[in-house]
Image (tube, rainbow, N blue to C red):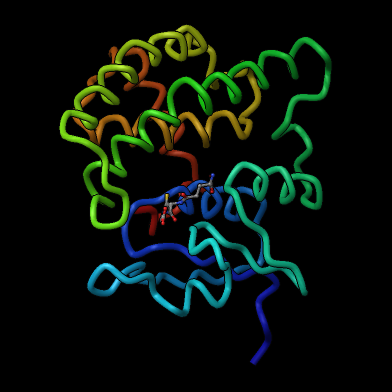
Length: 204
Ligand SMILES: N[C@@H](CCC(=O)N[C@@H](CS)C(=O)NCC(=O)O)C(=O)O
């Protein structure tokens, strides 16, 4: 049997691995997904630790390489893929793109992650009572800046679909799973990007 070029390890529930899955589809790369249960009785799955000692998902195997960290994996895939417009190259567009990514990473995702640690992953991360509420309220304060990137244009960066759209979908849907509501122009944008043919049917 022919070996696939990429193997994506993902959890059997929503995680940052879904970002990488979507990009593999956009780039029409040859891949397989292995979904694993991360824990059994509070102990990390040894199969995951064997592949990535951090025990984190996503983990992507390509040739002899073990790639980790969703955004770094996505940039790697763009660098070897066939669609360079996924990362804007001219200085102004690239600034807007980086501004979106870095702001989201530090001001929004960091708190979504703490909230999730305090809820879904509480067995391994023990946060004090009230952490979830505080983390969600910080997301509530920081996320409106992202709304200003969404307009009548098809995508967050204008006319081209970019990694920022995959990331935005991940962040907006993650925050909705924690009870946040978004304005109607953002919900319309989500419908628009989720209707792309490459949006994976198997996304969790
Ligand atoms: N910065 C990493 C974070 C990876 C990460 O923490 N993934 C979560 C799932 S979304 C995980 O594996 N959590 C298990 C743990 O923290 O032990 C990325 O963007 O890929």
